[in-house]
Amino acid sequence: MKQLKCASIDGFEAISVDVESTFTRGLPSFSIVGLGNSAIQESKDRIKSALLTNDFKFPPKKITINLSPSEIAKSGSQFDISIALLIALQEKNINFSDFYVFGELGLNGNLKDTKSIFVLILSLAQQGLIKNVLIPKESISKISTIPNLNIYAVDNLSQAIDFFECNDKEIHRVQNADFKYDFLEINGTKYYYTQNYKLDFGDVKGQTVAKRAALISAAGNHNIIFEGSPGCGKSMISKRLQYIMSPMSLEEILDKAKLDSLQVKEPDFTPQRNLISPHHSSTKASIIGGTKIGEVSLSNGGILFFDELPHFSKTILEAMREPLEDHTVLVSRVNTKVKYPTKFLFSCAMNPCPCGNLLSSSRECRCSDIEIQRYKNKLSDPFLDRIDLYVVMNEVTKEDKVDVDSQQLHKKVNQAFIYQKQRGQNDLNGKLNDDEVKKYCILDDEIQDILDTAIDNFALSFRAINKILKVARTIADIENSRTIKKMHLLESLSYRKR
Image (cartoon, rainbow, N blue to C red):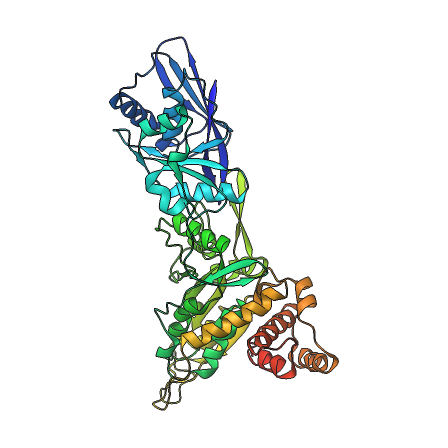
């Protein structure tokens, strides 16, 4: 028996799969066992054609290929080359144990890239399971970005066979790629960023308070809601948040590329966080997750934007409480449960009433009190308690001027990011847990008295208190202050939901 290593996706992560082969006497046949899907079963015809068109004889024996562990369902055409190599090299004394092999075979024996190869290899590397890998040359641009990996690439089946038969494997060695972006180096780790502002805050006139809140949100990864009349710039500001977000480590860039691949998008490996904006008519399964990974998980490390927030179903809004609080979501599937990380910035935009004119001084609101109340009741207090910043925006006036652009805001975000990382934080302020809040959000006696008064006057919950402290910590970082001062706490209190 011979075996090679490959992998398959199980939920969000890759599982290592041993591809085993036996050749026994009996009527000639070719079977693949181990819960392979239709793409794997169809590989038999691709493999036969690839071998025969490259002058390899298909052995007249009973061939059995086993994908172990056999109780886990497997999918994908990346197993083609592994199975073909086991058949082609059945009589050779070759040890494959150190190598993972990935690639789909064309009928002429050419090796092709698949959308899942990058995801699989990255996941295996993050788990520390892979050191040497053989891939198609088509995959080099993506796989070479993964650090600490010995990568070898070939064009076709014949080259793959020669690779294992010869001793000089270095001729197929691929150099790891370098990231050529601006970076901040903090405590020995590089954090990359780009100054490409496709959408610029310089396009937003007025709305000084909202832009200040957006800066705080981006600097500390705080959840934020913008409320205001139609056309005041709620969505405009939310869509520009993406370009002033904090720098990304190499691991975060690769995780973003992994999520892009899971969405069947070509990863670009830029240090710019994703923005995902589902429509309010989306189903709960598509947002939270079900048979496929949901939008909350695909937004991990980026921004999840809900426009027209109250128009999302109450079921979806209440289901958002778990990923917003625990930063994970547990999805139950047949015979298994899958946990996905959900550390995203949650940005929302909403009108003050169904017609949108409740806060307008020039337009009459057409909504009754009951309609306004029903509209507001879509958002429960437990849901709103998970929002750090609640901003009521002003109406647009002809006197509004541009007072700041994205480059200026991004510079302040980077400065706040440096403070947070130098304190030894793994997460930004908005995602600190209770113990970390006690460690990093320290108040002196005078400021604690102000907070205690606010707790009594506004009946703040324990979660709301922590949110206020975390926002105050971010404001202090933006203002280059090592400690939280009175003005920082008062500004933080001004962003609470009234």
